[in-house]
Length: 372
Ligand SMILES: Cc1ncc(COP(=O)(O)O)c(C=O)c1O
Image (cartoon, rainbow, N blue to C red; front, side):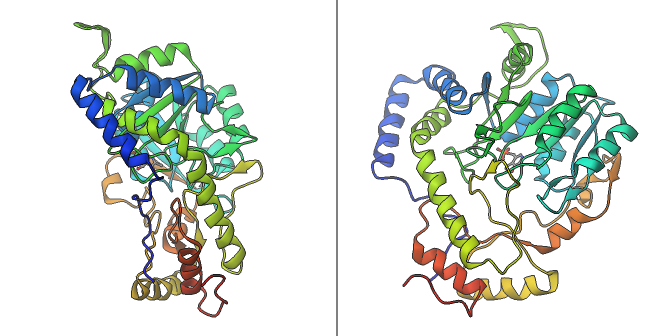
């Protein structure tokens, strides 16, 4: 049986009908920009995450750029970020005119290495840092990062593109962040029907700047207090995400159930677990292979029609596009090693037991099937 890496079409019964009805309503009212769906989504997300402010925007990359700009990060400033992340984190730093310094990762949680980070702050004196909550959990040193940055006047921006629904000590990761972001790219845990994103902040001042920056720096409709750009979230995206919110709990539970099966039946393969205190959202399951073994596993998966990903296949500091921008790369080569060894099996809401069993069988051909 073929199993895709992700299937975005497993909607709950009635979801498509509700969406079609909403599209008709929005189209008939021509309420395309702003309006009740956008305000409603921001209010829903504040309620769901416990964050103080939420500002919708065009995508998760813009959310990072808005957060950097709101914090006053620009030309000549240094920004630290992990060497293992999605390219958008690096790109956002460069796009606001700042100089990126990558920091290697901790192989126990696959997040930025805290000790190296502290060392990098002392050496490079950054204005800001991007802590990325990768794979559906976060750093085991999350509290240390927040405290250290507060005490050392480093503005901490948390890239939570992948972290919707993940919790730390029972709270959403956005709740206690100074500035954090989310992506509603359709494949994310809370996905849109296209591109969308949001920034969360605990600061009233940042909230005001974020709202203005993402709407051409407007003070009033035709007066501009800042130079921003158009990063408004579409009313269609806001409406689609609002319709999805009531289902996200069951989508996450179903992702977690598949993760649980993987952990039970693939226990012998080296996989990474979220650190203590985190409950993962089931965004990705991470198996770390010996690189020479990984290619034969991938060949077997391809032959059987089982989808997989390598998230991500290259570190930031090794990208051709980093040349001319990267100021320094701090630490060793864990990010590169991770890129060579990671394999993510299929994981999406409402995977059937038979599909999970098929993936397990393909990864461990000698294991007994647990279903079917
Ligand atoms: C860690 C991380 N940061 C930033 C982004 C950018 O989000 P978007 O694709 O919505 O621009 C993504 C997702 O694609 C991501 O995974």
